Image 1 (tube, helix red, strand yellow):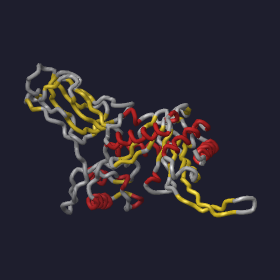
Image 2: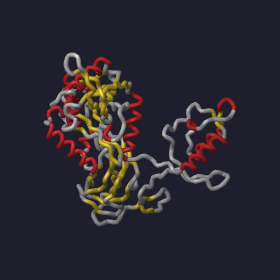
Image 3: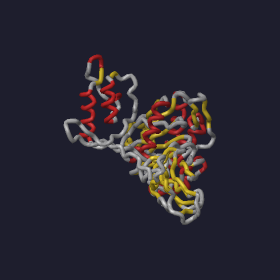
Length: 391
């Protein structure tokens, strides 16, 4: 017997979700034959068979999440054509190997006054340390898989009672099943939690006057050009911060992460050496990566290694935001919805007139552990100056 464990599918990714099995127990397979399709944090990876063997057991069904290093497939090294190997219990009884079935863990329905449930999903925190409750109440919470940390206590001295637990059980049943986040959305949830725990964010807002070119220009391409110039002037924003070593790596090339919204969640493909592209080449590159993301064919390597991020949320709605800086990067620029404004401008030595100008709202979030307010302000000033140019 040989158990194949889920390998690291890309730079320390902790887990992957089973998308599709191409083999089943009893199949005789050959090395490099397609075995399973797995979805990592942002990409779908196909895993081939590692050897010539017979498949004995699959450790998971479609939709299950497998952690890196955990069993994925069990093989028998017996000669081709043999039947699927059986497992023998301690009593000597042979049993056919069956695929392991992971719990689907969803909140169930209340059927009786006894408040019976189906299996329930674990809470996000899973932490009830420090919560005041009797052993009986803890046992009740454990029975229904309720995290005591989310239960509002009503007993003396802030003690959680059995009625409190049953109230939460009923609430969960009323609001419906808990749908575990998977794939891209699961990765996004973890990444946002990491960012919230690590980064010290500060956001600067301003409006760039783009009147001279906006009606004939490509806003995204112009923004990337301006960001490249700003990174050259203030390279500390184009960097990675190491929270453990308390240090940073200032990076010469701008590897731009471009946020792309899809029905499956947020993708941030990377345009490497973005400062070297011409306007036309950049537009072609953007169109290509958007097509790849939409088709879920973007390579995993193209979703890693960004040094600074651009998010064009204004293409949908909103003028200003507080974009989230994703470690190890230290800065992200958001562009909002265009707006027009009347300004009083001079027309000659002693004459003035109202003129309409077009502005692009900017929201620059930076990690204050690594970047000073002055550095961020100078970065934004250089960027706005370039956006104000006619060409």
